[in-house]
Length: 79
Image 1 (cartoon, rainbow, N blue to C red):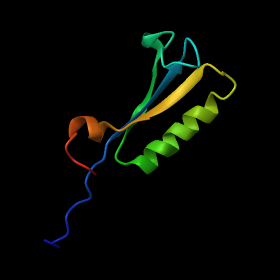
Image 2: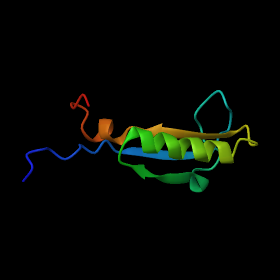
Image 3: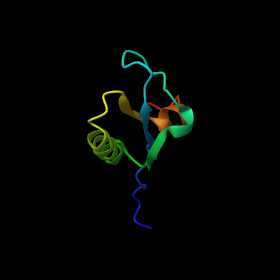
Image 4: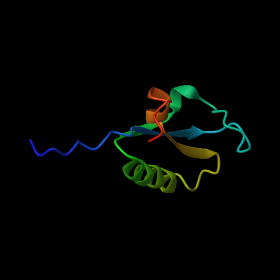
C-alpha cells in the first residue's frame, strides 16, 4: 500500500440534441438525443463536448452540454 488515495471520480455526462428554439433548452425530439458519454473528470468531458459541438457546427439548432453528475449524486460534496 502506497498510502496515497485514489483520485476521486467526478463524473460528467456529455449529451446534445437539436433545440426547438436557441433561446431555450427544449429539445425537438428527445428520442434523438446524442448521448456522447460519461467521463471521469471535467477535462475529458470538455474535450468530448468540444469535439461533438464542432462536428455539428453547421446546424445552428444543435447544442451539446456537460452535466456535472457528481454534483447530482453527492450534492453535499463541494469537490
